[in-house]
Length: 345
Image: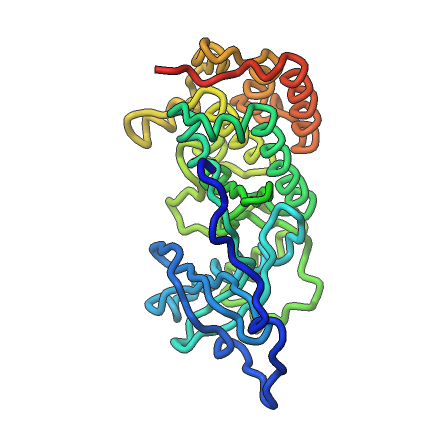
């Protein structure tokens, strides 16, 4: 974040002191002052004012044209519930799920301020002096460790993210690190315990998935022929559409760390198919060879190469193991005086 914080939202008396009306607003009717933040193909994200709690929050809504689409509704609800159930300091709190005036699904959550990690990496690659001071290498490693903590927590709860990339790591104005966008997360969880009536499970595919989840059956929510995730960060098993476990997130995180160190994606090809071939077959050199003028420590080279091993059994066994190695690498960086630098033009 190259600029100092200005005009930061203030807590005001009109949001704290008014008494509740005799009939407090409920559901979607209590939200007002919508300001668009981002728009995707299937959903839109706004900030809005919660008149009951007296605060600005974020609200994500499924677009009206998908209001009756069973597949999109199921996927949207899964994103909301996965995010809500992962109650961790490095995930975003979810407040409510409901239907808006168009009968489309929505969920509300904490309104984040700050920016995503990709924007930070962009400015570092440009040699922005303010960003370099705020985000030295040891700070970047600490941010990555916090993101890995969220993933470790998710993995222990039966969730694989499947779309780890710099854009999905959010950095707040006060050091917060939040892993975003669980929309393509894979849930294997535990068998249905009876709390979900069969009538609420929309289709036979969903019933089958719940029945098989106790056996860790790794089926997906995506349609045939689609791969959830972003090609540049996919693991070999994602490319091959093979069963996944938490080591696919370890691979993606290794790709992200490589990009953080070398300012380039390790497997980028001219096309998606060429990128996939590189992921499957391209022998990767360590980031220190891709960016020799940055003086990248050997310990970070080793972490990256282990994380992006073609065979998942050669990667870290868990995200917690990877975190341990990142902590040791951060100590190396601190001892060496954070020598990694951005080359000047």
